[in-house]
Length: 323
Length: 300
Image (tube, rainbow over all chains, first blue to last red; front, side):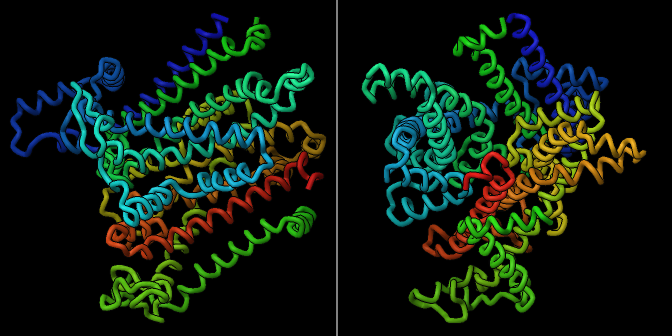
């Protein structure tokens, strides 16, 4: 058990090193950092200072080592586009994206989990069929089309919500939040719903399939045979078993959610990490793209690892098998 | 051939798939026939500023020459969409083909050679799976921009998008083909071919490949839908195909600028065509998947 744990952790570190190396090679082979970052009238001393700052005077492997060490200590390098510290740029944009993801997750939990349970428990009712039909839209409609549609209806036609920006934000130390003002909440509804549309479809369909499978399993038939009420059978025995794989899969979809946040933030001019990434792609700001690459890879790998390692704790059958 | 015949016979029992096939055929005809008879609206000669923002026919100020309206440069939306749809289809199909050839070659190699080659190819695939296709395509586009610059010709931009999406797609093809090859490799007909002295390459190309094509066809169809959406998204974000040689995504991006002032038709029609195309391709893909899945075949 412990051996397996150590092996998986080492594997993850190795993969992250490989991803970091690819990102590092992108930074070191593409573009001319001195030409981009130095002003035209820079002195030799300034030039040498920048060379030392970027470790350009060291051999390749040593530069890679200081690159990795820098990331671990929060030094993400300099952006070609703004000449700013990449870490500072990310810190500035992070609150907007985290709040967007949080509210969209909230929407998913409040709307999609009850809808999914309904579709799984009573799959043949009219409401369930209608939910399944609408949920197809979440898969087939491109994310930006949903955003445009919401803007056209709720912002242009009805005028209920603004179509861009975060509204009024309040500063709490290093964190800016839009969740404390009315205009902030008005501004976050449409983008959060757009981002949630993909997750909601996913949760509804997954829960439905899981519940329909669990519904036929032996422990549910046994619970029914004991004469327990339908409500008790579903809510105490079935849903708990169906919710777990759904939440796991949702965690593994995080990469997709990060990708879609780029689209959503662009549609609603949301000043978050996604917009930063898009601007970086547009202006070929390789250092930011490379850090983003490492960030997404690390998030995916760590969630994957956490899911795999927590499985034996949640499902006792697995522990017995491996022991 | 037998596969093809039985495939078409199943269409009779699946009206959705038939409808989807008809819709795809109609959209292909629209995209490739209309440009043969009209002037390119994205050249100066094809625009007429006097007609800009003409609304659709049934609205006040509609003009019978522009049944679905005209955009900000006075382009007829029906014509402009045919050009956009053509680009979208060409890019989507080419990207899937690149993913198929690249992934197919690596999957065959990994499955048939095995050993260290297999391990290296599949580990690269595992790492790439951490990244969604859309994100990867954006990163590849950014790298391409760093190499050739943002001011590039439309042809080069289209080629970059095709490669960016194609490279993002190879993993699924490689994994599928590899697992099929692992099953087929130990079959008697492969042993028979080896005994007759055929070379390894010939065995892979002429004996194994035809037997693993069915799941590949399914994945190709499903990926075509994803490729078209990915390209549309890239172009909508302004990092894909420029408006001088637009795709549906670029048209929607252009129209989106006028949504706030009420000219909804410039973005709505391309959205509609995009959605119909993607739904039709997905329905067809689902049908093919069910058809080639022996577990489901007897049921319907």
